[in-house]
Image 1 (spheres, rainbow, N blue to C red):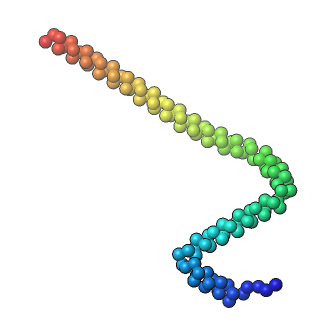
Image 2: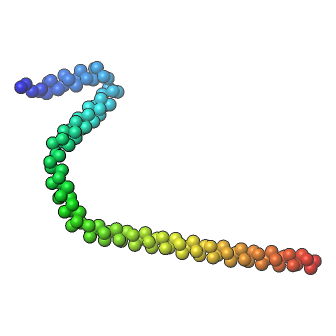
Image 3: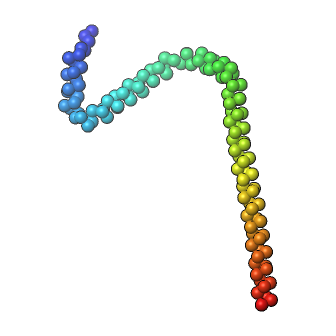
Length: 120
């Protein structure tokens, strides 16, 4: 087998630059990289069918070990969310109570104004 040395790589890069131009060369590089990545993932998935079963068993073991810790974190987050929700509900109820009082005062003032107009 012959290997491509540094002069060969430089020659290939110069040819690619001349053929595709400086604007298209980065796009071409991304496309080649993406294609190689997909090819690598496809071949890896074909060869790792047997390994998947072992990995799944290991993941299940790790998940059962980490489950109580994750539950505690979720519980703390839920408690924070619950407190925030309760605070919002209290604020909304207070706002509604104040609006109701304002409406009642406005209604009383209207009725007083109507009584004064009737007397006049």
